[in-house]
Length: 316
Image (cartoon, rainbow, N blue to C red; front, side, top):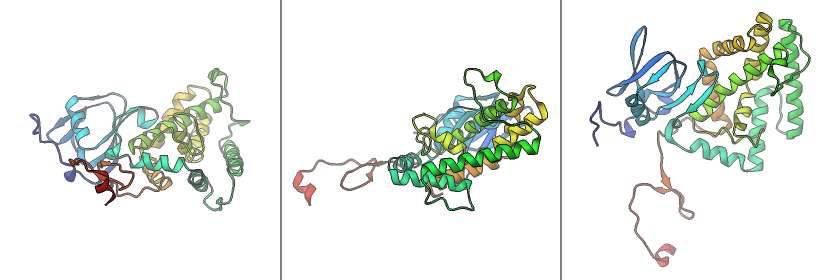
């Protein structure tokens, strides 16, 4: 049916393929509206037009107002939407996943439900932390010990580099203010990293709760995924901010530091590549797929009127 407002709804075969789209677009302090088949973004500098079918994920930061018509177009053209803090330091909510496909979720569930493949993915995660070593023969217990030693070494290296005293990692849920400045900073930095990790996971259609190393929590996979980047991003930022600001608004300074790290977008792009690699997903993902499941004949066409047949026909 033709819409009474703007251009007609875009057909699936007219949409840009995911690998041809811009990956993530972050907006803040702006009004998002629609004109024909374009999303318009207006702030104090003026208005820009964004071809909605050419953007994969829209990250809506603080101060963004979105009209109903804009969300209608965004939904029609397969753009995922995630509501975040500044540059992804928080993940508040998300709309429909990118691609309208269950491929990531099904693959993740398949891998995590089998002991052999679950261990294989976990080893792949640890291999990313030890690129020059072969961890394929190590048990999960050995991998945890090896990772623990690596993280302790990173803490000590950053302490020496920044002259911030370091004893041990200490996180008090019920008494955050009693922690040392560096432990406060580490908590804030890690939480910001969790926010960005969750944004990428849900935008691609995977589940935050189906973890391979962590388990039993609705954010288990977020913790798995974020752990890949702590040594390079959140730990150095926490020590750097503590060295500069001590205990003076250290949480706010740390969040700003993580925001600046996220701002160039390179980490988001890396996360997308890494998530696809971990789950063995190639780049050629259809914009939208729907099939009917059959226990004998595999996937069958959706949208076809099937007719009743007897058991004899079924056997032939």
